[in-house]
Amino acid sequence: METRELRYFVAVAEELHFTRAAERLGIAQPPLSRAIRQLERRLGVTLFDRDRRGVTLTGAGRVLLDEARAILDATSAAARRTRRAATAPHRLTLATKAGTNHELLRKLLEAYAAEPGAAEVEVLLCGIGDQARMLRDGRADVALMQRPFDDLAGFDTEDLLTEQQVAILPAGHPLAARTSLSMAEISDLPDLPVARWPGQDGSYEPGPGPEIHDQSQLAQLIALGHTMAVLCASSRSWLWSAHTAIPLTDAPYVSTVLAWPAHSRSRTVAGLVRVAAGR
Image (tube, rainbow, N blue to C red; front, side, top):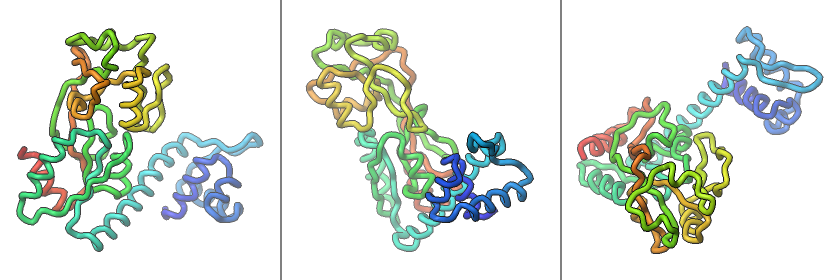
């Protein structure tokens, strides 16, 4: 299979419409249709069911869609890493979402900088859940991520910190005077719904709480008394006076990890990992 064929297939699979897929690809529809038929003949399977109602993916098509996306991402990542190796051979790019434990990151970077031959580290602040995409498409070499919340499939990891979770409440809320809380006590407060974070696919579970896109939005909404959040204990470092953090007795612990692609053979990545492992 050629990457061109896979790009054609992904476009049709995502649009479920040959004309729209052709427009998206900037080609005419007849060559696109021929390419898909050729791909089906080569694989010996039917990828799309076609009838008067439209186009749908078969079971085999759904499998190929997942595989094709991964292949195309890997191809793009290889190109990005190759160009970066040529233009900035002694630079390491680390992705982390805004609000990640800055003290932990600072200590890691200082320890690595003290190593002989350490590369320059560029820190890219990203949105919620973007670290995995940045590692997969080659924009980042390593990332700070959190288990069990982030998608760690296909990555090697080194644990940096495991910590308790806390409930972040408006300072004036009645529960803010408590020394500890349980998940049951905060899960159904009529006046203070729990903030909703995007899942690994970027979608939000239904619920009354607001959809959260970044840390500054969350901080403002909590201060206004519109929501509360469950976060790692280290989030106390960025709280405002209008916030209160209460330990949760039964919430699962969260581990901050250093993650990198499992296939990486980068010496600069290996150097940072050695420092992280020796902390």
